[in-house]
Length: 166
Image (tube, rainbow, N blue to C red; front, side):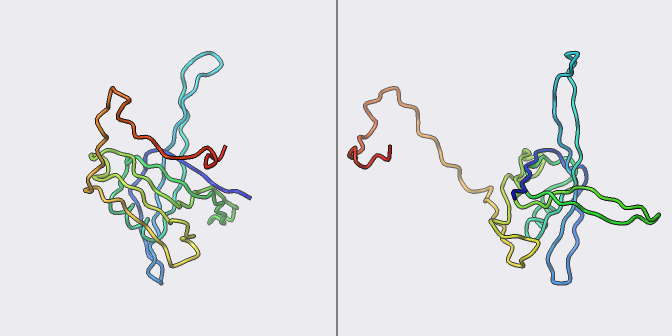
């Protein structure tokens, strides 16, 4: 089976962080995602959905450090069904997303940085070996080569037709 969720939206509250007895960080927040569409009458409408997010390990610490209410994020992870019994005895449930990768998509005013963080293939809920590799915001960005109007500057590639895979 396949369980993958990708959401882009704004955080609805600051990250709430707590730590397990083993010292692993767990962060929780919510995200608001919207969808714009035209109704049958041709009226422009917007539908907003609120989804709870849970971060683990280093991603939770980074999210707590750099993100706040209103920050724009792109997350991917897996859908989880939470079930519990309320104080009045009724059964309750809700869906939430366990975040595996986080991308901050806000500008400098929103998050002070732009970078991707994630579990890099590790299951952060089942392993203490959680990895998050931040991109360095101060690293110089590669400059695009100036556009050449002449095609005579394109180098020739020495390749035979037998090496082409199609």
